[in-house]
Structure formats: structure tokens, C-alpha cells
Length: 266
Image (cartoon, rainbow, N blue to C red; front, side, top):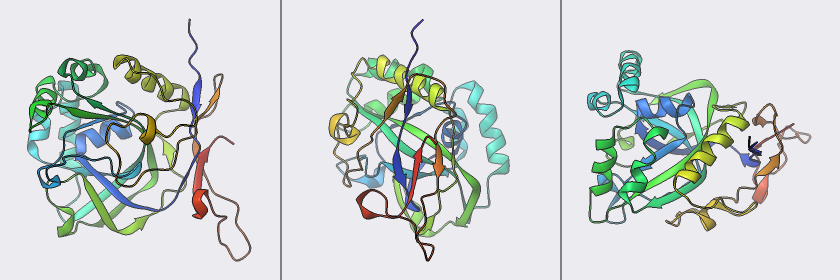
């Protein structure tokens, strides 16, 4: 039996403003570790260029409309009904998760997109319609490491957050410290390997930036390189660790001189 290495992603994290909009039922599936993928073509408001991977880490912004329940597999439909019943009021945005991009692919074959069917909750018809929509037949598949915030955060749902667009810049920063991963290292490594094997594409070399080696669309704000380290197995998983503090309460600067927190193994 092949033993997959456990991937430990070490990177700095800090309070976030960037948020990515997706269906509430999909955000819930990501947050509970039922899938690690988002599949996106682009919103109507995103212009001729379509979807772009503008950030490599972001909060997950859930949206709700009644058609969602009809566009996911039956096992996710009942979960949608629960979410809809307990969704916050229309003027409140509730945030529970943030995500980090670990791989992204531009898929130009519908057959390749179909092969991912067991790795997400969308119905086949939804993926086919997304693939065919617009001038170019393609779709973006993005693998995420998802983390749960220590407590849900509720903010006013501002008018500027509306519209058919993927990316939102929040009016205030959200603290991501003390967040915990949706999946432990071993299970996440297995899911990520399954994604890569399904698309029959090589994994990026250790120390390479995903945005440089794998993404077919250049992000407008290139992310910090991922520097995964491998351990032979086991491990308690990644968690957010507070940086050492100097006198006066300031945190030591992280990568690129920015104060923050880092995700790693203690």
C-alpha cells in the first residue's frame, strides 16, 4: 500500500479583507471538508476577461438563493434546506471560513471537468453549463486548504458587496488567528493528490509558487510562494500559531516584513 506523504503548508497569515463569493451550500461543503474544490467561470460583472484568481488567500463569502438546492447533488440538497432556514437576515453577512489556494488549473476539456464529478457537490449539468457559457469553453478548478474561524463573524451586508462578481473587498479586516483546518494534513494530502491525479498533471516542485508553476491565469496580485514541507506520516495537522511578540505588544514581522501569523507544525 502506498503511503502518501503528509504536506505541511507553512505560510504567514494576517487579518484579511479579501472575500470570495460562492453559494452557501458550497461554502458549507468546503468548511466541512466535503470538497476542496471551487469551479468557476466568472461572474457577469467581471468583464471580458472573466474570472481571475486575484488572491491566494481569502474569506469565504456565502450567498443564498433558492435555486441552489436544485443545482447540487441530492445529498447536498437537504443540507441546503438547513442552511436556508438558519441563514442570517438579509442585512447581515456571516463569515465562518477562510481559504488558501494550493493549486489551480484552467480546464479546457469538458471530459476533464466531468472526471472531477466525485470531488464536489454540483450536478453534472451545472458544470457543463458553466463550461459552455461565454466565448471560451473552459472552467477554472481551484484546490483550497480551508480553515474555520474560531468564532463566526457577523458584519453589515453593505450594498457594494452585491452584484454578480467573485471578489469583494470588505470594509474591515477579519482576524484569522486561532483558526483550525477543515481537514487534517493526511486527509487533505489525499484529497489534493486525487485532484491532481484526476487531471493527470504533475504536482508543483517543492518551493515553487503555485501561481508561477500551475495557474493558467496570472493573478493580479501574485501570492507569496507556498513552501510545503513533507513529513512521512501522522502529525496533528496544521494550526495557526501566534508569532513571538516584542516589547510593546507588536508581533514580529512575517514574510515580506508584514506582521502576521503563520500556519505550521509545532
